[in-house]
Amino acid sequence: MYNKKLINLTAVVIAMSLALTPAMTVCAEDTQAPENTWEKNSGEVVVNTGDVTNNSSQWSAVYAEGEGTVVVENGNATNESDEWRATCAHTNGTVEITGNAEGGRGAVSVNDGTVVVDGNVTGRTGSGLYVTEDSYMIVDGDVTGGANVDQTSGVDGIYTDGSSTVIVEGNVTGADDGVTVVVTDLNGETKCACTTCSANPCTCDSNTGDNKNIVVVEGTIKANDKGVYVEKKNDELINCNIPTIVVYEIDAPTAVAGNTEEVTKYLEEHVQYIVKNTTSAGIREVYGLNHTTVTKVESISADVANQTATKNEQKETLLTTTLNKAFKVAVENGYELSAGDNVEMVDLGGGVYSIRLTNNNGGITLVARLVQVATPVATTTSAPANNGGSSETHEESQEEAPALFAIFSVADGNLPEVLGAVRGGETAESVVRPVATVKASGNLTALQYKRAFIDTIKNAPENALVRLETSVSYCIDKEMMEALASRPDVELNVIFPVANEKVSVTVPAGYDVMSLLDENGYCGFLYLNSVFNK
Image 1 (cartoon, rainbow, N blue to C red):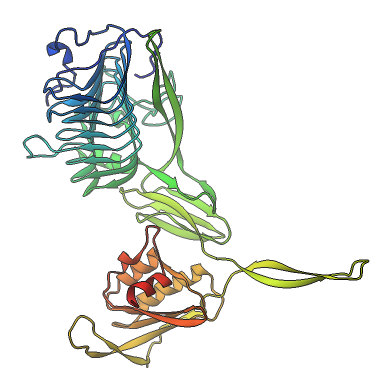
Image 2: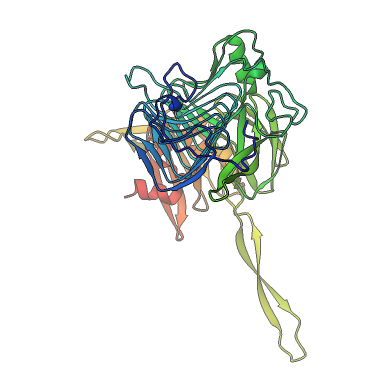
């Protein structure tokens, strides 16, 4: 456990080691290391400045083993061999890499070891992270696991067991699985609900409050097979030996899976998904979420002269939910809410939404968007005359919602017809399209406009031309564009004012309309004009 004090530590060990063979679970540096390269349990604290590159095939670039052994590497750690590690901490040893770590295998922490990497970790041909036996691994950046040397199978972004703590702030990518957890029975321990955090599985050490048996990925797990895979070695291991797994998003053909149906069902119900909130304004309240607190080792402060070291920690509370568990979000007046592609969102009225994760892919981000844009309207007021005999006139600005749209409708019969042209051929062929006309002369809010647009597109006759006319230059958002993309037979004609003149823009039927959205999921009318009226 990483609750041992790093005080009066006596030793470093820099470096060099035999790596794990596929069947081994320990760092075997001590068996074949060159003489005087490091001494096990020598009790030094060492700080190195600059990058470390190891081109040998038998040692880690940075290595620490033994109680009181601390290595702080202020730079990058690289192993050029495709079979050996960038860094390893073993048997209470501690390593911090302030840059990136890259090797055939990435970073390893076993038997109460601790590794902190401030940058990214890359395993070119092996796992990105390997963490077992009550060890700690903290990575601020991204983690990547590559393919095996023979290129016949992939490997994991993270490999760990049911006892250790892994916290990754960035994304995790595995050529095979994203995160693999192989749960073993260590010393007959079970990791069930404890009195300190009242969680099941336990997310803390009941004696210290530190993390225990938890895997956290604050970014996206990307994999070619399974995002999260858990294997219990025998049926006697109860489910609470499975570590707490917390993730923002999973991008993989299979999100979660176990080696038995029981384990798979447990994962589907217990993986916790981080709910992110990128909006500083607009969201009034969020309630009904879990609170998962993790302790991160930010850095190691090492005093070489006095042979002491201390850990610098930061506690962070993550808001999470589980599959099919509903929570509520309230937004301020004039805002609407979006939460992601994998949720069911119900508008309860009064600015309150119920949100429920409907699949194990996660990716929940709360975004409050201002839907009623205010425009200043000048009014004139007169003040009484002063003793000097003159009166004063002031202009004050009042805010009111602009009039956007009055009605969206599709006539049931006798639709007007217009001549259009089939694009793509050398000769334009005249065709007749039914028209669904949209007029803008009323006082709908932007949210009403959005809903009416989507309904109009969905209900338009086959091969229709949907005409949208507005009183202001406005935009189309992602959900509206998705509705249009679902109707490749529909042609969209947008008419809007620019400098007191009406501009008409036509988006051809079948166009890749999703490509028109900007990074925030919006497409303005002026941008449409720049694309289609060149």
